[in-house]
Amino acid sequence: MTNMQMEKFGDLELDKKIVSALTAMGFEEPSPIQAQTIPLALEGNDIIGQAQTGTGKTAAFGIPLVQKITDQRHVQALIMTPTRELAIQVAEEINKIGKNKRIKVLPVYGGQPIDRQIRALKNGIQVVIGTPGRLIDHINRRTIKLDHVNLLVLDEADEMLDMGFVDDMEEIIKNIPNERQTLLFSATMPRPILSLTKKYMRTPKNVTVSREEITVPLIEQYYFETRDKVDGITRLLDAEIDGRLIIFCRTKKGVDDLAISLGSRGYLAEGLHGDLSQNQRDRVMKKFRDGSLDILIATDVAARGIDIENINYVINFDIPQDPESYVHRIGRTGRAGNTGVAMTFITPREFRQLKLIERITKAKIKRRDLPTTGDVIERQRELIVNKMEMLLEQGTYHDYMPIVATLEKEYELENIAAAALKFMQEGAKALKTSNSNDNAKGSGSMSNTGARPGMVRFFMNVGRSQKITVPELVKVIAIEADIPAKSIGLINIYDKFTFVEIPEEHAEKVLGVMHKSTIKGYKVNVEPARAK
Ligand code: ADP
Ligand code: MG
Image (tube, rainbow, N blue to C red):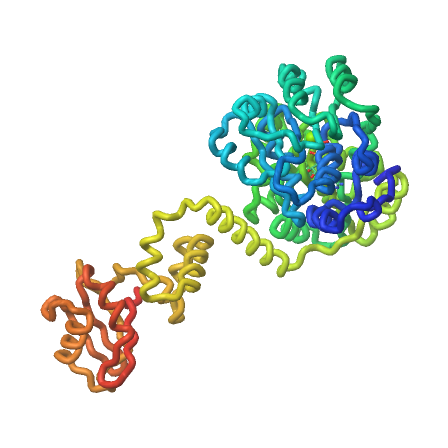
């Protein structure tokens, strides 16, 4: 947010559905390449965009593209990308931008079964994102129709050139109507790319953005005022941080103390400072790079010269001593196509220092409140919901259906699902605290204690007070559940309840029918006896 535009997406004459989708994506304002490209593209110009990775090129072409898509169910836009990863990534971003317009997007790339793509292509796809090789394949098989394409995007054109795709690119372009708009993006402009632009683009407008301009706007900057910083960090870790994090402390001792504090609270954190041997430093850095360590805690000196990509968060546990080191620290995030978040903890006394940093760096550091306990719980819920949604989408749980069918005979599906989630979250621990009736049901294992081998012990809520006798009970169970009377084992009748042993193979049947029945006019409740 240094010297940048104050423009908003709302000022760009965009469909409201797009603006709201962008808000949902967390985009507050256009990045420089977006601010320049979107109006020109909306006017229908051909555009050559030159900008480094991480400058927001996808949305720069994705936003006008989504705006231009009509309801018609044929391929209207084609995007070429060098790799399958990029095709998938771009498809996801276009999907998000077009969410409220319900745009049909399909990535096509080598390595995925072509039949599936062919079937999908017949389904009214409006935007295709593909790698050149696979696109040629579809063109040759005549499984993709390009005669209604009026927008062509070449993303990372120089990469495609480096990968030897130039002939394919040309071949594909020739299959697209001349009456079209063409947008080309490239970090560099080698000669073969320039000649493509001369041959296939019409009076293109040039849009260029340099690296310096872009880094800062994509980093969100916040500060928290708190006296208990360790508590503050753990709240952030529990409620929102998701990704790689570097925490900066002022001193070596600060690094060690925080590493111990976080470690003892169960977080994977390690410190990096000048007292470590080269060997130890290398070991920590390797863990951080390969993802087996989430949190790196460092001093400014130790962090100097380490080069790590993909850092999502920088936390200044101690406010940096000078503005320059602030810029240095936060510059470690928001690189290489990642959005970054920088958060600074201050004590009330350090407020003036924060203002100084803001003034000199021209950064906008917004005040924020720390997440509440409610936020932490909310996050845990969200994570569970996400996991469950993924699994439900995958549909890979059918092996467990018979168990659900069994449980469903006696329990409501909602209760079964909630119990399963509890078990997933807490594991065996979930079975231990069983003093309420509810918990006992949740732990209703069929091999409860107290019964002899091969038998299951049941608890029934009727007893001597209801004038129940052993022969009566045997008769009712044998008849209701249709099992041999002599198979029924030990029966202990007490004042208000009764224990009955049933052979394992009949246990389910007895549970299934008995809880609906009555004995001497009393509604019977049967459940597996609880382990003590
Ligand atoms: P490029 O293609 O130039 O390498 P991307 O399009 O992949 O860059 O964008 C880099 C990252 O920045 C992505 O995570 C993207 O979601 C994010 N981003 C793009 N535009 C904005 C914006 N206006 N505000 C916030 N984040 C953005
Ligand atoms: Mg890109």
